[in-house]
Length: 261
Length: 261
DNA sequence: TGAATAGTGTCTCTCAGACAATATAAC
DNA sequence: GTTATATTGTCTGAGAGACACTATTCA
Image (cartoon, rainbow over all chains, first blue to last red; front, top):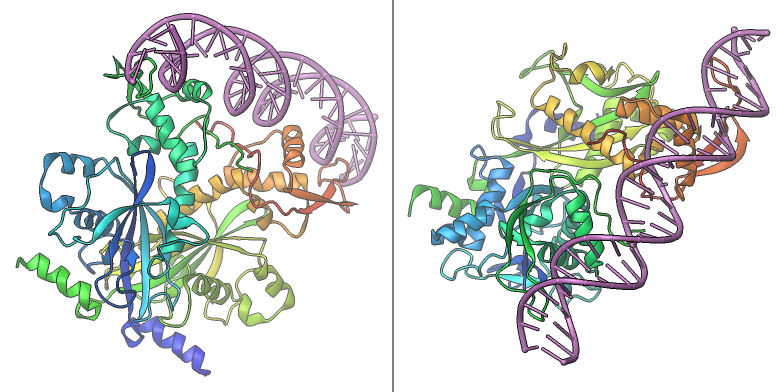
C-alpha cells in the first residue's frame, strides 16, 4: 500500500491518529459611523503577527457550542458590550444580523498549526467603541476604505484581508436582494438614511428620487410609522417621513446596483 | 475566576488542552441523468447510521491540503473515477464545478465527537456510475426528488438531509445569475438541452420561445459553434443549433425564476 | 432670502412574458 | 401526412433611470 493511501486509511478510521486541526470562528463585524463603513478589529498581543490588527475571533468550544453560537459569543466578548450590561448596548447587540460567510483552511494560513476558520459576517447599527478593561481592550472600529486599497497602510494578520474582501463582496451583493440595509440603522429611520447605507456600502451615489420611489414600491421592505423626523437635513430641506423595517426577507423586485457589469 | 472564563482562557492559549474537534469535508455532487436531478450518495459500512446513505466525505488531511483540495479529492475517490484512469472519466471530472456551500458544526450532529463539516457543492455533467471495487463500492447516484419530500422514503445520515436541502437552494439560486447550468452539460449543447437543465433544477416548465431569446441575449452566456445537432428531437422537430459555454461568469441580465415571490 | 433636500410626476428604454407563426424533422 | 419541436416575430405591461418640479427647512 502506498504511503499516501495508508495515510488516508488511518485518518478515515481514527482522526486522533492524525495531526490535530484547530477550529476557530472569526467575525467580520460591519457598522456605519459618520456615514462611512467600519469594521471591528483587535490588536494581536502575541506572536504570530504581534502588533498587527486582526478580525476578532477565537477557538470553538468543542462539545459545547454550535458555530453560530460561537460567533455571537465572540462578537459580544470582543465588542465589550456583553460585559457592560448597559441596556442600550444589549439592545443594539440583539438587533445585529449574523450569518455565515465561508470557511478558510489553507494549511499555511497560521504558522503554528493547521487552523480552519469559519468566518461570520455581522451587520450592526452604530455600536459604541469597545470598552477598555475588557478582554477587548485593544479593539477598535476601523474605516474599511483604507484597508481594501491596493497599498493598504495597515496590513491585517493571517489571511484576514482576503476574508474582509470576501465579506464586502457578500455585503454589497446582499443589499441588492435582501432588506439587510436596515440592520445598519436604528429601528426607526428615514428613506434618505437608508439611501446613505446603500451609498456607503456600494461606494456610489444613488439618484434620490428614483431610490425613494423604488424602496416604497418593494412590498414589505419598509412600513410607515406615520410620523416625520424631528429635524430636516443639516443643510436644509423638509423633514423626512420615518419608517420601520418591514416583514420581507427578500426584495422583489431587487434593488439593482448601478453599473454592476 | 468563574469556571467558564477559565475554560475560555485555556482554550485561547492552547487548543490541545481542549476537547478535540474533527474537521471533515462533505460533497453534494449533483448531476442530471435521464432528465432528472441526481445526487451522489454512499452507504455507510459501520456505526453510527450503519446502512444509511450519506453524502460522500472524509477527514481533512491536517497540514497537507486546503479545503478545496480535500473536496476535489473526496469527489474523485468516491465517484471511483480517479481510480479508473479512463480518459473520458478524467475529462468529465475536470469539468466539474466545485464551490464551498457552508459549514455545519452543531455539537450533537455526530454522536462520537464534535465534528465540523465543511460542505461543498459540485455541478457535474452526466457521470458514469461509481465503479465497484474502489473505496466507493457502495456509492450510487440517487434521484433527488424523493429525498426532499416531507416523508422521504430514504433517511440520510447525520444532518445530511439539511445539507442537501441547503445545496438545492443554492443551486436553484445560482442558475439565475451564473452560467453554471452549462456545467451539467457536455462542452457542446443546444438551447433546448440547456432549458432542460433549468426545468429539472427548478422543477418548473419554461416557455421555449422566451427562454431561447433570453439565453442568446445575455452577453457571454453561450457562443455559437456554427453547427447543428445530429438529429432532431425524439418526437420530431428540426435540428437545433449547437453552442459552447461563453466567457461570462455572471449573467446580465439574470434569468429570473418564474413565480419566485 | 438663498441653498439644499424630500418627495412626486413624467418620459423613455429595456426586458419579461403571452401569444402567434413558420420551418423542419421524427414517426 | 401528422405531430412535435426549434426559432423568430409581435404585442403588452412592469420597472429602471433621466429629468423636471414643488414644497419645506436650515443658515
